[in-house]
Each structure stands twice: as C-alpha cells, then as structure tokens.
Amino acid sequence: MNKTRSDIKKVRRPLASAKLLGAGVALLLGLARICGDQETTSASPASALGPVHVVKITVLSTMLTDAVGVGEWGFSALVEADGNRVLFDTGGRPETVLNNARELGVELSNVEDVILSHSHWDHVTGLVTLRRELSKANPEALSRAHVGRGIFLERLIPPGALGAGKMTMAEVKNGYEALGGQFIEYVEPKQLFTGVWLTGPVPRPFPEKNYPAGIHYRDPDGNLVLDNIPEDQSLVLDTDKGLVVLTGCGHAGLINILTYARQVVRPGAQVYAALGGFHLFAAKVDTLSWTADKLKEFGVAQIMGAHCTGLEPVYYFRERLGLERKACVVGAVGSSFELAKGINAGSIAQ
Image (cartoon, rainbow, N blue to C red; front, side, top):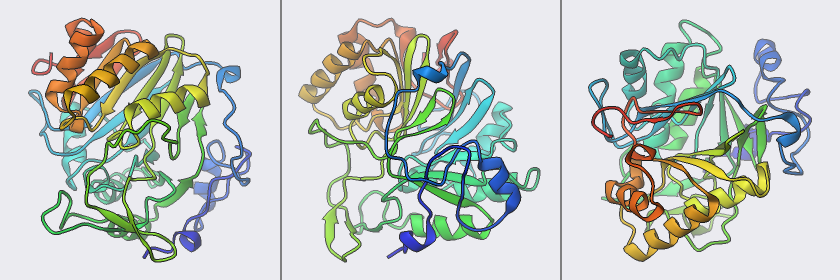
C-alpha cells in the first residue's frame, strides 16, 4: 500500500505560504500563488475575487478524433483561463496527449500545473511521459500534480476487468517523482487561480453510481472496500455567464458534482456549461431522464460529453433539454469550448 501520509503533504492555507513535498526552492517560489501551509477549512464563494473573463478548454484525448490526432479510451484537456493554463488529466497511453498536442499546435511546455481527476489509468498514464519530454524545454513543466485524497489507495482490479494490466497509480507516482514532480493532495475545495476552483473529493447526496463494479481498494487499516473512487474531483470556472464545470469521468456523479460546484463557488449560480466525461455510456433511460431534468434545473446551456459519456446520452440530453445541435455535442480530439464563442465541435462531432 502507498504511504500517502508520509509521502504527500496536504494542501494548506493561506495561499501565500505554500510548502510542498520534497525540495526545490524554485518550485516553492512558483507555487506560492497556489498552495498554503494551513489545512483548508472552508469553501467560501469566489465571487469576491471576480469571475474569469476569457476561457478556452481544448480536448487533447478522448475516443473520437477529427482530422488531426488520434483517439483512445482516455481523457485530457488543456484549460486556459485569463492567462492561466493547467492540464486536466493526461490520457490513457503514454504519448497520446504529447503527440495530439503537437499535431494541434498546442504548446504544453509552459504549463506547470496538472490536475488528475482520479486514479484510473485512462487519465494518468500520460503523466510521466509528458513530464519527461516537456521538462527538456522547461524544467518546471508539469512539475505540480494536483490530486484528491484517496488517489494513492491500493486498488485490486480483477483479471479481465477494464484497467487490469494497465499502468497503476503507484507506478505513475514513482515515475513522476523520479522526474522531480510533486503531488499536492486536496481534502477540500481550493481556488487555484482567481475564479478557477478545484472541487477536491465531492460529497454524494444523490445515489449516482457512476463507477465500475467489482473493484476494491485497501483502506489504511487493510480492509477491502468497494471502490467508488473517493478521490474523484472536477474543475470549476466562475464566469459572467455562470459556472463552467469540467469533469474527468464524473465518477462522483454528474449531478453531485454540479451541486457541490455551485455550493462551493457561487451558491445559486447557473451552471452554464458541463464538459468532459460523465460515465453514462451504460446508463439506462430512467437514469438519463433524471440526469437531464437535473441539468435543466441547473440551467445548463452548453454540453460537451466526451470519453465515457457515450454517444446516445449526449443525443438524449440534446433532445430532452431542447438544446441546439451546436450546443450539445460529443467531444472529439481538438474540440474546444470558449466562453465567448461556445463549443467548436470540429467536423466529425458536429
């Protein structure tokens, strides 16, 4: 079992006094704007600091691809918000995100922060390769990985299950740290930049079971526990149009995530856009119906369902919510969302 308590230093407040794992004065100076040295104890709304005005989110890994890049079972997206840039997840194969970014003309060597939504191989396998290759141009490239508590729990995946034989989080951790990368563990929400929030692990008041069956993890006492992916976290951007929420797989449940995002960032705000993987590819109609009705309550106006969302759920949401074709699409490699322009689905996904 990974010794997370000794290897990982929890994120603490205030923002101006960060202390991270390991050494490296240069890294500490660069991180002062993000992490602090006292444990996060509250989730006060970000509205006092103002919203994000310029947003672009570009998909770098998902199953579907357009004329550029390759598809895979995985997810990754580059998030740009008022000049700040962060990579969200790293894809399911070592070189997919690296190569797709190059083909798309997306520069990643100046991105110093990466968020891992959860521990599954299809979101973390590219991390070590990206850190190794990008650090050749910039030693600080992807030097900080933001993760939710629970990501390093020992998983027991049965033979034949999705993910069996794939890269484990323990392997990713060892490889990344050997390259000078530092993990920052979150137990509560954190504002990374003005108007850009990481949810940390998400409470689950609604009984959404958006996670694989039959997989367990070993808790700190050595007990086997059904793995509901407790570390699952999402990114939330507070904008003038409402909240923009980016998920990796949505294992915490899409509606649980949106509920918590609004509670943490701006109570009562419209959720303007929901983007990423929602893990609904095998969902039954009653689940899709309930989810769609909740999305309507949140006022969701833009949907890009990628990765594990599936195709049919996207089309179901489009019809149920009465959205135009261009406002509810299947995400593809190269697809993007801009606050000023909405979704650019690309040719194949439109």
